[in-house]
Image 1 (cartoon, helix red, strand yellow):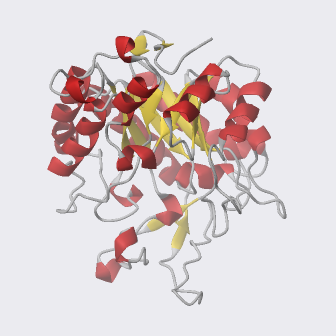
Image 2 (cartoon, rainbow, N blue to C red):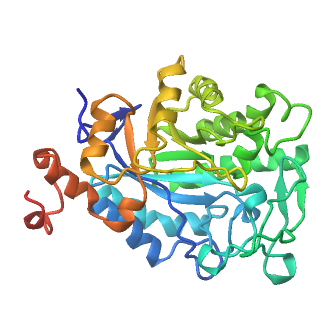
Length: 372
């Protein structure tokens, strides 16, 4: 039986335990230049101090127009990578593995931060060009449910597609040089790669649309590009939305996610991080209780013909839940988001609760508080 505090071996990289901090957008580059700030350093560093085995930095834009908001973290230039290097060093010094999620927002780009209304930003008020697989923009609504005009979404041509692939490749090179040990390709939550995967948003014909082969092509090509420049001994993850949650129309499903997992394994991906939803308004379950996305991860794990590792996220709030996910062989990695926001030291607290303090060193400055 595998325990939560057993290491996870992926290529030549050892994640010291099966707890990963989920990538969570902070929208905190106040200079709007994509550079990490003291906020990012403390946010990520404190979770490493707190006992997480893998600390994944938030969705980090691979090109300027790939940001969700003007305040998003970016890695489209060397200055941005340099600003992250001291954080990766600190995370490693705490015994954790630093990871980064590489992302492009697609048609969900160019809007204000959630606490500023998530309203669309037009070019004349600080916004930028929005691109996607098709020309249908995100359907924004105001507080009364009335449709709000969105910035035009331009359907990508072959040149745009090649530029995006190259942007992911170059971002991976910068992330590698900044000291990250895991690169995660973001193909979930209604952002660009998920927009290509899902027939809800991909209305193209030809090489990058139509059937499963066409709709998955860009995600596969991006993953290949990242894998080509990522060190052989270090893992590449891909985050997918296990389902779009739409039973009334053609959409992305857990079964398709399992098929994609096999294709990704064949090009060198090491773990599929299974989340869900985000492709359009209403793309979420009616109830989102504890472990609500775990069945999606299990479907990917059971129906995939490869041995690719699987992580699950969603509603994991207690040490016992995280332990059960791993010990019952339902997933290889318990990915925790909001609970790590509520409690940066969730990993140390879990080790204490599960009598696993012998397997976690914990920072000497904090041991007296956690039973070490």
